[in-house]
Image (cartoon, rainbow, N blue to C red; front, side, top):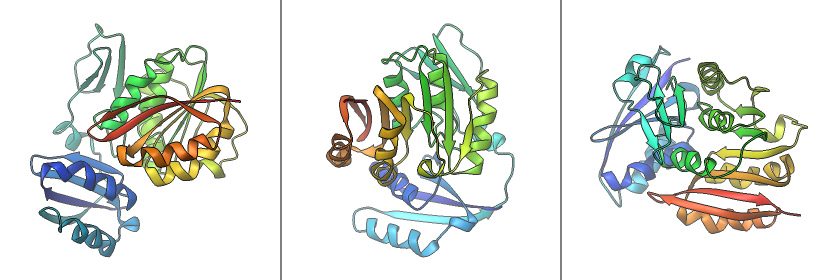
Amino acid sequence: MDFIEINVHCDPPFRDILMAEMGYLEFDSFVETEVGFEAYISEEKFSHPALQTLFNDYRKQTRIWYELKKIPKVNWNEEWEKNYDPILVDEKIYVRATFHEAKPEYPYEIVIVPKMSFGTGHHETTHQLLALQSEVDHKDKKVLDVGSGTGILAIMASKLGAASVAATDIDDWCIENSLENFELNAVTPDFVKKGVIRDLDIKDEYDIVLANINTNVLLEEIPTYETLLVAGGYLFLSGFYEKDLDQILAVTAGHNLKEVKHTTRKNWVGMVLQKVS
């Protein structure tokens, strides 16, 4: 399966906005550059007319220039090594790639192979959820990571003492990458399943459900997340803008989910909710 690479030149304030919008078009991997960003999508999912419509809409507000090319499926490590730097969250969570030096002085270290999967920790959504996870007791909890990407949030849950973790995603790359990252971090998941959460027929209930996806998917799937949670369990959400917060809260309120806390970072929201009776 080949991929389409889009190299986008845009004004800095619109970088995150355009990446989020392209996520709705099923672009699933992004790399920030000095002039904008690169975005990747499998050739079979790519719609050039849809991309042109998106960019034409935003050209009313900013300058956008782009070029695209087809690239074969390859080992992405070399390309990512050129762009990927380790990150530190709240001075206690150190996320690094396999080619970075270990830093055991930090309480939590997560090692990932940053392939074509969302969730390297750099994006504001993942960064916020990692920080929020560190504030909630995971010890001996049963955790499900929906739309797991690299598996980073499930790995964090395990390092925080979760009794078990499981993960789902709709993309083959993400399933492959998360399995690799679980092994790197000595995490043995209950399962890593491919598919839309409502179609997977998961029978278990969980103390914690993690979902870092996008607004439309969250709005559709929140009712399913609620059914997967035990009473008193926690739901972590991100992948949406601050302007969408009221819409998210309207749906969660209708499904026995009460906000515990939310944070914002560059207009992106990270949120913790608790299931109430």
